[in-house]
Length: 147
Image 1 (cartoon, rainbow, N blue to C red):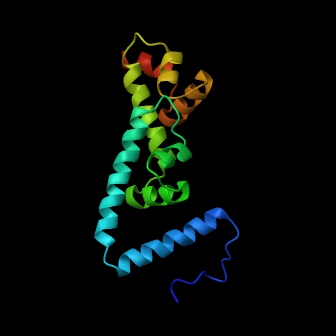
Image 2: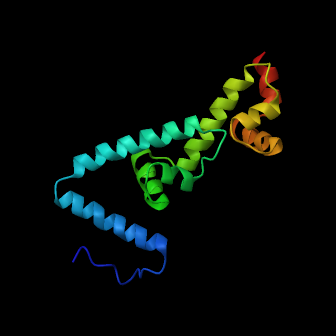
């Protein structure tokens, strides 16, 4: 029936097992009429995840850490985050970092390496590369253009 594992997709990894279990749980919730409740819970989880990222931007915002914070399996969290928001969690983290970096660059008193640390980069060079890739110019050039 609908609850049997697909023989074409044998379960040979923890990720596959988690995906299968998630699918089963979703089916059961639908049959029991908890669809709306699941949507509300997912919305709350997304809000918690986004707030956690904003609050811990300069710390550990790895998927595993965030998943532990909201008591979910990392694979399941990734799935519901993408399903609900339309973007990957890593894209949200990058966007949040870059937006915060841009705001901080408008404050001329902070040095580039301080901004890099504040938005969670251990390497200033890596931060500069990511900023340039995201905005098309280096943080220093951005600051000059904004004066």
